[in-house]
Image (cartoon, helix red, strand yellow):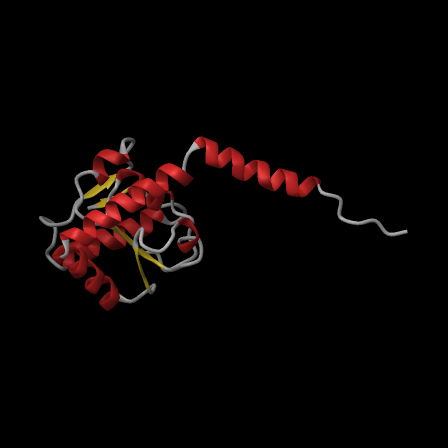
Length: 153
């Protein structure tokens, strides 16, 4: 299931994906949802989610999957590792289909690991991705900007 609409050249990229799905004869196995308002409902249907960006990213989808308690595989592109701590997701090398397939198989075959990642990711999301944490973070940046920088005489 491919969820969402791409930004920037999204229509071109989506067409390429649809063409690839067609060439591989996977039309009955791949679903394009487009934009979804209630994304938690989507994540709750997944056994595993993967965010496999190959470019720097700050993905809301990673936060949404974590908040939904969906076991998650994420590529280690700038922006993604900063959202998580060890033990909350499986972090893989970008552009490495072998690592991706191994991570999928690992999660598929290990229900205990899936459950652990689900619980730890959800707890982390509840702690860090909420209004109070966001206000604290913004306040910290603002307070740092108000500190005297040093004066030249």
